[in-house]
Length: 566
Image (cartoon, rainbow, N blue to C red; front, side):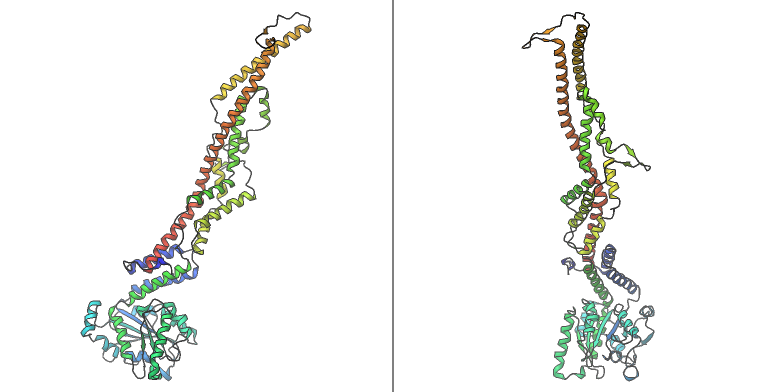
């Protein structure tokens, strides 16, 4: 049992609160635990609700046992009159027989129990009735006055079909009644008291029901005096093995009356306390909590995913969303557009041979019929898709480490609950990002003007040289050529203008390219941050939040089961 299901130092919670907690835990485990345990707990809660709505004045005591254990004879001995036929006339009980004593209003209860054979005792001819109305005296009287009401309690004593009946219908009735009665009396005999079927299939499932369980070794007269103590000790040991730590063991003989008075008084004491119904329900709720705990233990799970686990998921989804290729395209787009303004004018035409890298991806430029932005990004390859799927799976596994298999499976299912939506959501995250696709820089027009001035300089120089050459060709004396004397050799001014213009253009282009590369790198890093942030939003919306909701549900279920267990 999990430590979480240990009792609080403050004591168990009220029964109603524990029932509510069990219902809440049952709802939380729907879809996590297997159907079998969920159905059994649902049926138990239905039985508890129905029993609480019926007579609280009557304690239902059921006598269960195998064929030949003497249940019917013991019922008659306890009651003091023959209400259940036994021996040769009817060796086995085919239908439940009820001996009813005390407060009126038992009919609805008996209808729910589906008991038709009813014997109402008036107290004048029944030993059970006589004992019930006798007020206790002395020390026992003072004890009962302190613990609860005394006087004549309402009792429904049931003689039930055999647990090992060859008639399946009879056995089914007995099995059904084990879940309905308030007090379980297991009647056995010297030959079958250690029967494995009785203990494993019937007694053991009610471990922890000590307060409402009694074991009776009937037909004690068949055992020699010197051997009785050892047999009773053996039966008590079996009961402890079955999980009944405090359930009393009685030795009786319906034929001689030995031990019958002691058993009768014990059952009356249980009925007088009027605690049997609540004790049975507390034990049932505790057992149901353990059933759910065994079916899907919600303890051991983390309460939330760690930042590192979320970062790993985002990294995997960013790969599937092609964040890095888009970020590189943003940087390349900036350099491409910068080249159209600061590049050497004679070579700018070369840029028209290739499109803008960002425009080629279609980001932020196309919408479908539903108004959703679409990109022209290549579909993720098999490796990228596998990384995304694997990333979701790894995140779910990391976030649920330490949990039971059913809860880990539930966390994985939660992580994959939006698996079909994830590709489109990632595509929209990229397409809708503010990547500053048309941004410019203040230095573009400055370098653009300088480039055109440089171009004009070398065009003027080249035109000047060309004009002189044309005049010489035509035999017309050209005007005097100005010389630049400051250089190590005199050079004609037009030549200087050509060289200066070309050199300045190239230098400005190279400088602009370097600055554009540096600035483009900054834009690439910014785009990566923006895209990663948007991928993180998608990861939270479609994966992380779903997983953490499941983890929160598990934590709530763990608290509810601990409360239900008491």
